[in-house]
Length: 402
Image (cartoon, rainbow, N blue to C red; front, side):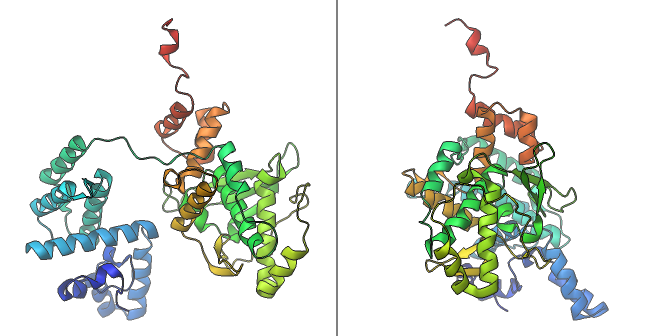
């Protein structure tokens, strides 16, 4: 299979030939080494090795690295330079040129984007057994100079706190078919992302097999436990991170009720397709004042097949088999923000995770408690959220007597 992406189509034949890999992550796989494996063993064993090598990084990282590597290869071809192995001075000039580029009167690339491009170049060299040119002093000093000259406040998405969350929930489509499908899906998307402090990639990757239903020891109330696979802070899934989602005080903000309602739709779709979903939604009560999660024990879709929880839904209420992407989740949050009268550009997938930390700080939670649910390993990150929520908390300015 050849690369048919728009970026690849604009590349000269020489670069397309060099980058003939079959998947977005293959730039981090040494194809020459795989040829050696094929000579020693067979194609099947080489393909198995390639699959595991490609899984060493998250899909989002692989896509970004591939785009960055293609950009660097195109620049090298235009300048008559060699991309693999690359000369450190060439890499430094490439990064400096990117830092100097403008688009519509503003800088085209942020320092973070340039650092990611450097990381992509280093990763491709490492995958091919070559020394990373980014470790040289000329590249490191260039990046340091870019950071110093281009100092700016990090662009952070606005957190979704409880009041905002309720406003977003109010903007969901009406019950019934077809809008009720999206209504139920997005209720769990918003509530789980917020209460679980989930990254958008984590939320998109949850399957029915990853969720178990338990009970709180003190009250006996139902409890969802999400067993996360590879995450940003645990890319090899060694720690087996878990996220608890307790029953909410109100039906409309209860993550367990939202999950029970959504998997009911998924089960109907599994059994009878859109016809069964229409029958379910058109015959249900328009409003529900009691908790749906009472007596809920899980879903039969947790059968080991890895069926995704959050899936695409079109305007006709038809449910896709494939999972939503992280970008889709960000767009959903932005769409609801716009419907609620907010600036959608200020919101994104991270708004739910940031909103958890901010709301928890506003409610008096200790940083240790916030770190546990959000799985933050660095207290400084949590303190940034706390300072945003409580700028005068533990601050000597309150003692000045002004």
